Length: 123
Image (cartoon, rainbow, N blue to C red; front, top):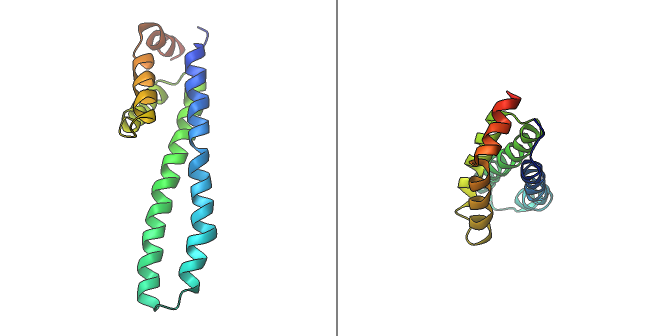
């Protein structure tokens, strides 16, 4: 069965949504870390700040990697990627108003019978 055009669009959206994560990681590494290391507030404050930055990098990085993996899996009509896209879309519902609209549309589309059947046929 041919991959539905909407699935391709969602895959491209997932790839594009990973770009801000990459920019965020570069910004943190380029500005926050050198600023923390250059600040002379003491080793304890720097360690706490670097730990917080590390947690931020981890969260941003995981989000970006999940988006790329989801897009890749959607292009291959992998069932797990469909469910991962639904989970990511459900999380984006919290980003009112644009994320809510996009997330709701993705969830609605991925639950359509013909889309579900395309993923089942590819399995």
